[in-house]
Image 1 (spheres, helix red, strand yellow):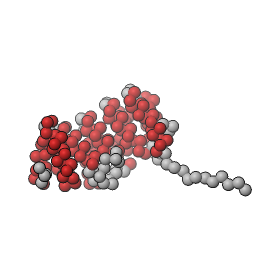
Image 2 (spheres, rainbow, N blue to C red):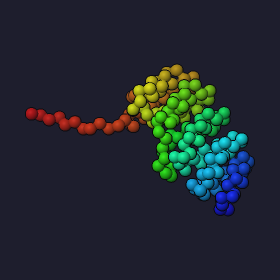
Image 3 (spheres, one colour):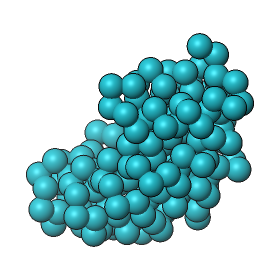
Image 4 (cartoon, rainbow, N blue to C red):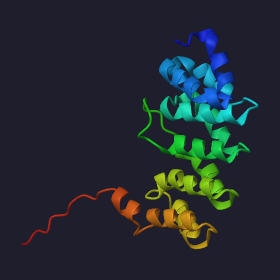
Length: 185
């Protein structure tokens, strides 16, 4: 079935039905960016499963005009949606286009989730987004160090340790400095 403009609403409705959700999601993915207006509506759907699948869709087809809608999903009461949103905002590998969030638009909210979200999975995923700016923002380093030392979840503490100075991800992503020549005169 090819999803024409009029059938996107029915596909959104099917996202709320567990045994139909994956097939409906695949059809929305196959429609590509044409489904984006329906996806934006789905982000405000009463059913959390619909909102979740719409966040998953945006992981592939994120566009600048949807960033504000997506960032608002960080306040969703369902932890799965906050996790999916954090992944969508931080992951570059899944994207079809080149839309990436700006620091000012997402970092304050991601740092708040890292500091105080009640769900450890959300805090762990917040590390991935917050960590994007560990080399350029001293507040990020401080937040990651605090999470590494004080978070109640061992998984969050471990993941934060990967991104703090000296951690393996921090070392791997550290910007290269210009080679200095040792000249002998």
